[in-house]
Length: 429
Ligand code: EPU
Image (cartoon, rainbow, N blue to C red; front, side):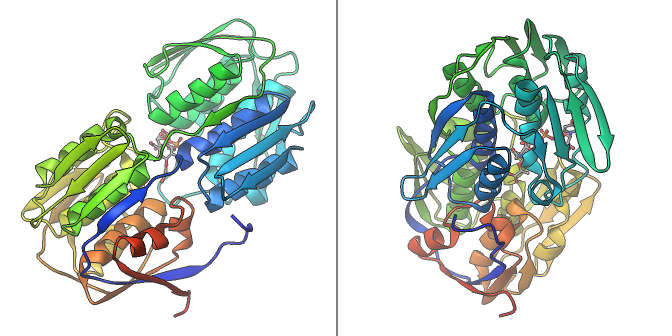
């Protein structure tokens, strides 16, 4: 995490290798960004472990610095120390927020801590509209005044937030996190109904409880928070990245390889691993992770993405890649992000046969893909294209690889270690 510049590289893959060996997963991107934001809730030094060395972490570190924090990241220890001042600033600027939609996660802590938050409206991945209506409605129920002016969302609660009953229309990960972080220091009790249950939500709840928050129903659809006056800084280890772990699992199955994934929690991937077994893989679960082996062409598997514990949307492109070379046809249904099928046009450049209709994709397996230049359109699309490149004949070049670098620390090095022929090349190479 040396700098903030986007390393605009491409990655070249020569297909044909079987992934073989062991790979260790670090903390989850989609947890650690929120944990860093949660540090704002307490004055003093919060220390996070298992922090992945990815661009999004640098962006969040920079955002916290602009809010007045001192942030030190030690890549060799995968640890970040965040010193939060008595009075943080309350404005998150557009130049950072537009580069990472997850910046919106400072909204809850800032309005709670400062009584005011000005957060630029986010950009982020090209995967759909991704509204904020549930974040806003929840904060309003807690007494905040929320307006949008000049591209900024402005939330005001000068006399503090008050506990309230909130029903989410949909178990949104981001809205659940915003409202949790707002509720922990509100006056009285907040009940969030139809809350998200992702392992990353459980992780942030664990951290908040260690900071002194009072939370019931962690990991269920009804979370009850008793507000407290003050939270204390803490030290916390980030939950491991189930999506990175799942990407390796698919990589093993797709390449007919043998990969042991360590520092992973198979329980967080129950459905995905079960799908791989249906596709013909062997999955052995151990205390520190799991091993996936495959000795034949996969059988196509149907997928329906849903909030946790359903099948994760963040593994959908990787499973489309698997289905693209599988025996038979599969129906993939995407229920979270409408634009997440955009990448199938890139996959088609490799010879994949995928037909989309609304939020369904019909994937007809072909025995052989053929290498071609393709472009990553978001993190997971990029990961899916890399996996497809591993089994395509000849050379595949994945352009716009910076999308993948946002979410996968050391991906290329790990692929090389597992025997893939992969290298970074200049973007115009
Ligand atoms: N939504 C609304 N209104 C809201 C909030 C959400 O309409 O107020 C909609 C979104 O537009 C979207 C759906 O609800 O269609 C799901 O949104 P959710 O809030 O659950 O997702 P998120 O918090 O925006 C996080 C991850 C995503 C992951 C989803 C679902 C982070 C930074 N992002 O997004 O990760 O796909 O949960 O699990 O945590 C990725 O890592 O590649 C990625 C996109």
